[in-house]
Amino acid sequence: SDAGVTDRAGPLRRARAEAEADIRELTAAMESLRRTRESSSDDDEHDPEGPTLSSEWSRIRGLLTAAESRLGDADAAWARVEDGTYGTCLSCGSAIPPGRLEVRPTAAFCVACASLH
Image (cartoon, helix red, strand yellow):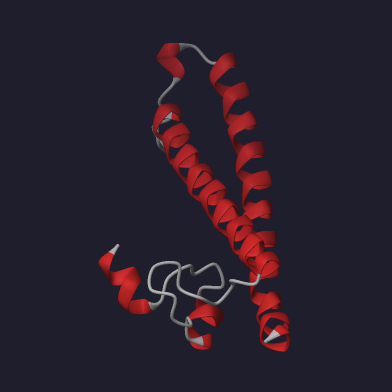
């Protein structure tokens, strides 16, 4: 029902907003690290007090990739809201339990089908 989708839109909006905020923060962190890398010599890359700049770059890039994936999942879920298929398993067509959508508002599969993927 439309009311059910409206009730579930809050968690979906929050998931999208959190992914967007993480992307902004991580993009800024990568830019800061890029400036640090450009201003340091290769001999200077390792700070004895912390990780190497290269390992920090890899860590932030991984987090950014994950945030971009979460944003894509949220956009795909919004598309399902718009076409009326939100809350329906893309694999078997069964209803995705409201509890699953509350915990994972971008879920595209019911629990049984998600465990097969």
